[in-house]
Image 1 (cartoon, helix red, strand yellow):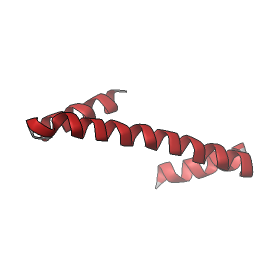
Image 2 (cartoon, helix red, strand yellow):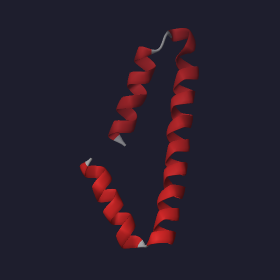
Image 3 (cartoon, rainbow, N blue to C red):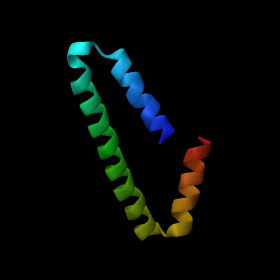
Image 4 (tube, rainbow, N blue to C red):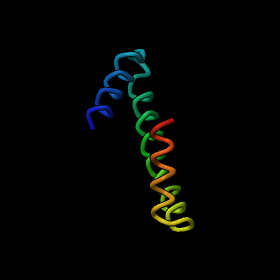
Length: 64
């Protein structure tokens, strides 16, 4: 949550005042969409390959 808040503040401060609201809305839409797509992808991987395989893939991606 702290990272999400800090990135939101960064978007607000880096955008021009006339477009700050639009850029923040786009940023939050992309974040929410990314969470939704990521949740679907991990659920699909877990359903098709199993929990152990999904955890191994997650650990490998975290190390990368």
